[in-house]
Every structure is written in structure tokens, then in C-alpha cells.
Picture 1 (tube, rainbow, N blue to C red):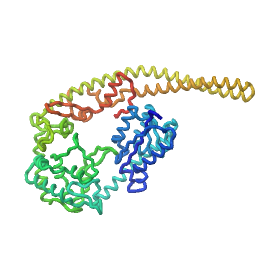
Picture 2: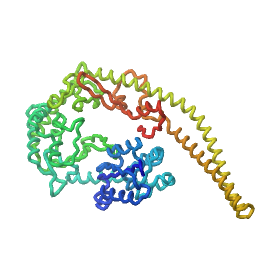
Picture 3: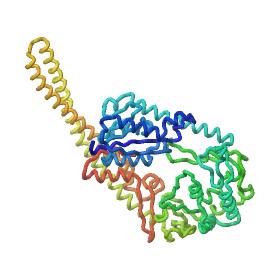
Picture 4: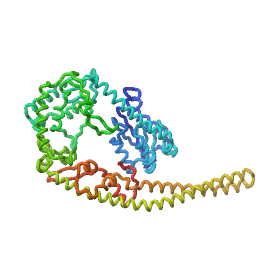
Length: 542
């Protein structure tokens, strides 16, 4: 089968352990999924000679559709590189009822992509499978199962934390998990030595920036690099580069961690949306804190002295800051780290990386917040104008489309009536032949002609239904870009609410070159391309 590509999609996450029921985990393992799909492909004649590619997300929730392998697969689907997707069951593809249903019933059929869930017996080549109540019910069931399981897992973790178990995936820097009991921590001497030194340096009056610079100068591995060198599977979360270095934020994170006093602390944050990486900080009164559960690395006196020093530094920093309209949005384009906001009379941003390491050629210039806001305002006005224009075009198009829709619906009804009449005619011919009213030759001749007419009518019906479906898809007003940007067409002042909704980030490069990155960029590109070539907006994220 030349030019035909089959994609195997595999997924496994911690939720599939089903609260330590190992049979469930083993049945869902990556290797078992792979073997099942390979066997299915090999015994299916339709895939003989087809190219087979694999996409695998190991350790990702089914509620999260930002999985890297999943996104790569969908990108290739959009590019026309994949003609069929095969999964073990629908829960491997995803556990969100609405999103999964949209892909199966709208996206894949429109793009001509066949979707197969082996254990669910679903094959989109059969139209009845797509629209069946059984398919919808299974998608909903997987969604509800994921939500219920998430609540049970969270409840179980809280119970274990309350009795003093360490339940996080990785031990904090300075500790390692006890080989005999993964829920208990033991001191890791080399890293613990650095932790004590950090508390002593900050407690003796050195700033967090000065402390980070000393550690970088001495080439001491950061907590993340230290764990990676020790064989940990922890992913390095660098901004742009693979190199990780000590920063003031890392120092503060260590200083604030009561785990170094021998306490178990759990529940400082929680995910507000199942499967999402977004989290919210809990009030301290909602934390679970259990003292004396492992050996402390620092004393209470050392801990308090460091807290007082950091508190003093942070209070002085706060007094010098103006309200941050661009809070958490401004990054250095060279090192990728968040830029620091300061200034009393005039707010400005600068990169603190040169204060802790000479590894990057970050600019030491101060960039005025107003200059950044001017760049943001200019970009916002341009995009808002496009959004308004597209909304107006959409409104006019819908008027014309309504007329076209009514005309096509009327023609479709006429064609369906004709099809029903032709089917009655074919049945009538058979009855006439059975009663001996016409000969076999007359029956076969008339049936051939009538069948040809019926097939022609059926093709016309299919064409009209496809055209009506295309009209319903082509609705720019439902595009997330249009919805979010058009309301800011006449805005005079940038506010924190505006930047939170439409601004992704701002990158600052040497010589004060400013690059603004916006949310809904993919939707924006779809609209620009759509001016030259109409295409359905199937992947809109509102």
C-alpha cells in the first residue's frame, strides 16, 4: 500500500496503575500496547505494505492533550503524512469526553484519517462506529473514570502524607529515598553539605544572588543536574539551553523548604484542572506538616536565621517595585530566564543571569517597562484590527452562507425524496418480475438503469451533505484569536488583565530588541492562510 502511513499511538501514565493494582498496570504497559498493535497491523490485510510509525507518551495524563508525542502526531496528521491512527483503546488516545469525541467524529473524518481503537472494536471506516451510542458512552466513561481515579489518588496521597510518608516522586536536594522504604528520606551527604552551606551563607548576610554566583563560580552542580548525574529520570526544565545553573530562585526555594528541618510537608500546591500542568498555591493552613519524620540537615536556629535574611532582602526588593503589568511575561532572549522588575520612579527590567554566571552573553542594559508596553500596544492594535476585520467578514459571509445553506437544504430534501422514489421503483420492478408481469430480461435491464440512477442520486446527496458540513466548519468568529482580540480594538491602556489573556511572553535581546509573542498564534495563522485558501477551523482552542 504505497503512500499509506499507519501511526501507532501508545500512552501510559501513573493514573493507569489504578491505585497499585499491578494487573491493570501490566495490561496497559507500553510494551503490551506495542505488541497488541503490531499483531493487529500484521493480521489486517488493509495495512499490507503500509508504512508504520510510532508515537509514545510515557508518563502523561490522558486529560492532558499537550503531550509531546501526541502533538507531533497531530501535526503530521494536519500535514497529510498520516492516513490511519491505531490505539489499544480510546482511553490511550485521551480521557476527555469532548476532545476525544471531536477528534473521532469531526477532525479525523474531515481529514480522511482512519481511527481504530482495537479493544473497543471501533473502526471509523464504519460510519456507524463513529456515530454510535456505544462509542460516545465509552468516551464519557473513560472521562468519568479519570476524574474519579484522580480524586481517589489525591485522597490516598493526603492520607499517606498525614501519617508521615514522603509521597513526592523525587527526593528534595540533600536527600535520597531510603532503598528499603521509598516513603522515607535519608540524608545524601554530598548534597546535604551544599544545603548546609547555602543556609550558612544566606544566614550570615550574603544575598541569594551572591550565593548563587559563588556556587556557579565553583562549578557546583545544581540540584537538577546533580540528580541527573546520579541517574535520576527527572527531566531538566531549562528555558532555552540544556545547561542549568544556580539562580536566586533556586536558593530561595531551598531556604524556604521546611523539609530540611526533618518535616514532611505536603499540599503546598494543587492542580486545579485534572491533567493540566497549571497549579494553584494552597494557603499554609491547608498544608500537611508532619515533624520529626527524617534526619534534619539544618537546625531550627540556622533555618530561622536564613528566613529572616531572605525576608529582609525581599521586603527591600518589594519597596523598589511598581505594579507589574507584565508580571511573569518578560524573559531574556539569550538565557531564557525571567527578567527582574525594579525601579521606583520608572519601572524597568533587567536580566539577573550576569549577576550569577558569565556563561551567557546576556545584556546588562535596563529596559524600560514603558518601552515594552509600547511594543505590546502596537502589536495588540494590529492584531485587534485584524480580528475586527475578520469578525465583520464572518458576519457578512454568514448572511450569504445562510442563503446558500437554505438552497442546499432544499435541494438535499428534493434529492432524498427522489432517492426514496427510486428505491420504491426498484422494489416495484422485483414485485412485477415475481408476479410474472415482466420477463427476467426486462427486469434486469430496468433494474440496472434504475440502480444507476439511484447511485447517482446518492452521490449527489453525499456531495450536498459534505458541502453543508464545510459551511458549518468555516466560521472565523469561533476562532479563539478573533474572540479574544477583537474586544481590544479601541483599548487605550494596557492592563494586567489584557496581558494575562492575550500575551504569551516578551523576549528581550541585546540592544533592547523586543520580540512579542502572542497567544492564539496558530489561530491567527489559520485566518491569514484562510484569506487565500479556505480551510476548516478544526483545531480552535477557546
